Length: 403
Image (spheres, rainbow, N blue to C red):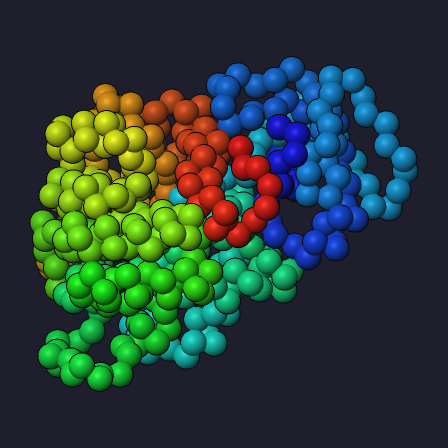
């Protein structure tokens, strides 16, 4: 574990290996010694024997069965674990740091400053829930990320996608119907102006929009490959974008050393995206066995969510409720297929447009025990999700090895 880019705080019931980004000068002055802890490393289901762990700056420099002597200093904090568990900070692989904090009407009408302040408040809450890193899968998050990185606000490390790229009428098109048809020189929509989501049709437009997000600092790219629950116009069965359009996005991302993930539920949407070179499927609840087999053959990640008809479901009505029920019904099958074909599975919440739900981020993780053991669930949300983050390669916004 030595060399991890993380530091530590005490949480209820255990000690969590936390990763909040702070000013580097401050991190370099900090040393923390954990005495008498049992380590869950994110890989083994067994806890270690009692250990002592020294963290200097943002690196774990020593793990020992014997007591570690440190020079008394105001910059060194000693935490007596008393046999409690020390574990890595949790990672949410499908988070929306900006879009989770507001409703759709607020997103489309509220002052941008207000939205950013809400997101900053939620970022600190996210960290204190034990989520030390998040993979942000669409939203205007670059400013929040910078503020966290500079130590202006507290929050998790963010791997940002920037705006989700969507076709006209697709999962990311939140225009009103009276705005269609749009003139060729039409002004940007509210969502585009905020960089929450951008509309692109055809190979050239897709390539351009992807390059723009990379320019802004995206660590990976997200496209909408099919219908969604939260979007107004597209039925859940609709496939979006062609193989050529996916290939354009993938080529642009790979030129920058990173990858493309797609929102997709159905076999056609998933398979078309994979044939276009996409490496990560977000959701996948309506996949069939042939799709799971293709994902296994191509070594494709499934970034899954426990979308169930339970107390953690977003309140919906009308067509959205029907779509939500379809997705919930397919969730059990999707995870069973993932296990049958030994897919690489990441975990995330995908809380969207529902600020009242964010407090349940950790509770939602526990619902994964429907398919996996508690140890496997914790491994998925730590070491497994960390492996997914490495796909960003040199576009990772943080230096150092992630394990």
